[in-house]
Length: 327
Image 1 (cartoon, rainbow, N blue to C red):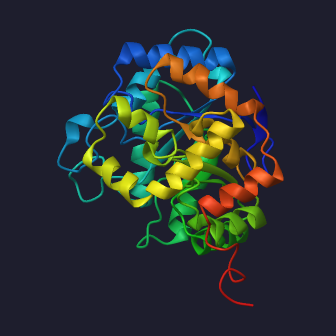
Image 2 (cartoon, helix red, strand yellow):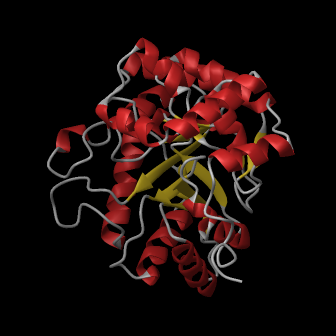
């Protein structure tokens, strides 16, 4: 396994992060345990979850809340595992039907953190990520709440998710004014077919020293060899629409991967790892075999010519702002 610092921190994490959104909703507890066991065995030390994972993510469906964290907590309760991993979770999404059961008020941050610690059966969260920007809560309030959690030893580092570049800049300026470290990572949608963050988010992360943690690195399965996969099974309507929309790109992409002798999924992950701003893409295996299969990506080196051809097939926004659209 390879390891990399999260942004400007001294914290080392595996180049692949284990995503657990499926735990409890798609993957049962025993299989989830097996997946985490195998991840730890292969050297993956970075586990990502969220308070809302594990059930229907709706304020009207309280029964599903926290299941993923609870599964991880029961797994962590087995001897010696907590100190071997970097544990990340998130706050923001609705965790009940009450008016203050969501977003980033100091009230909710405190309660959400305590609830996550209880479900995870641990006394601290290594990376506490804001799941989305809160446009109605001032940064003074957010940072005061986060600072207190850090002072209490309940949170070590703070990260963001789904932030715009200017949100990152605003957050870091406010943190600097408080002599607080602020954000150390940003978890964004990023893959060959979704490259919008190259405009401003990645430049902001590079400038402020945040590590980029891509979610949906395979585009919901689109980049995982979907043309061959659907020959053996019927794709759902959403995927069928995606295939129809990107059919010519997919044909070229999967042909290139075949030429390279690598699976499309591995090429998609290798392309992300090639970017110096990226710390670790989040993989969400549903089986133990998918964990071991993902390790191949760490051995792939993409040539300049291959990177050029990938840019031709999956063009990005044209570079960084404002050069992408102005002089």
